Amino acid sequence: MTGDSNREGIRGMANPRRYGIERFAYILMRITGLGLLAYFVAHIYETSAILRGRAGWDEVLAMTQTVEGHIVLTLVIGMCVFHTVNGIRLMIVQGGIMTGKPGRADYPYTPRSQNARNKIAIYSAIVLAAVAMMYGLTVMFGEL
Amino acid sequence: MAGVPSSKTTTRLKIKRSNPAAGGAESYSEFDVDTEAWTTVLDAILAAKNYGDHSVGVRYSCRQATCGSCGMMINGKPRLACFTKISELDGGTVTVEPMKNFPIVRDLVVGFDRLFRSHHRIKPYIISDEADIEEGVRENRQTPEELEKYIQFAGCIKCGLCNSACPTMATDSQFAGPQSLAQVYRYVADTRDKGKDERLKIIDDSHGIWRCHYAGSCSKVCPKGVDPAMGIQLLKGHMLGFR
Image (cartoon, rainbow over all chains, first blue to last red; front, side, top):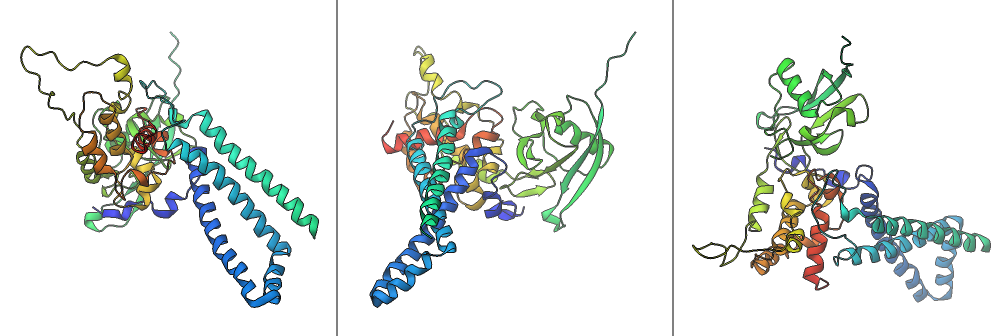
């Protein structure tokens, strides 16, 4: 036997194409979580520039006032909204709420845990993130 | 007399071959198999084995989705070969590979040691001082409502498809897995069982229930409608005091 050599690894874990919208939301949750973590680190670096006085602060702030800076901030808005809304869904579901009621399984065995309420919550998180990003783009590029 | 119309077609079957014990490289063997609308992937593999290459390694038994022996990756998804009709699959070529997240024994056969160890660890039996029925004593009775709470989870055939689809199993070599976690719920929800605290202690660790992040893939692939994701979330709710 090959021990762990047949494990799918990160590539298999991160493949969003095979198991429907729930698996897609799972992967998006991880990506947005990592993205927000990276943003928080960058944000600490950015705000710490104030220790170098007004000139230092203005210099770092100018980086966000570019097209690239606005795109990055728009992505941050999208990540933040999706992660928050989907996170609330996950907290509720992992508390055993909204998972459906156990009962005798009948063919074709549609899983009750993958119910419409969950799907609506996932699509809502995506739509809200998209709307927030569009609003962010309008505000930021309106300033340029 | 008019003949019965035939839906016979030829299907290209690609079987992944490997023998880790012999240190051999991985390869694919291809077979053209005659199939009908009702031909299952297992039928096709056995046809390839019988008339193409006897050395194809495959494990099967009941051929009716009861024994849980013939789980494998079929066109990239974990499924039971005996429960998957070729006519239900997209495309002309059917690719079969050993189940992911299980060690390969040979070709399509994988080792179940870890799954059975995890299953055994959660004590998959009724724990109760009243479990032994003495003469003249009435057996433990349950209402239909009490039965409904766990009967769905009692349908698990230990085929391992859920563990194969689980993203945590893909990256954590010590994770208990959706199969055994769902079975914990099966016994916790059983009114006859008194082993709740013992079982919850076993799964309440860093590679236990809290590593499930509700991707739901286990429930998507379950061929018996067990819905492990539901059982695991209900169990979490129970442990968190919400239920």
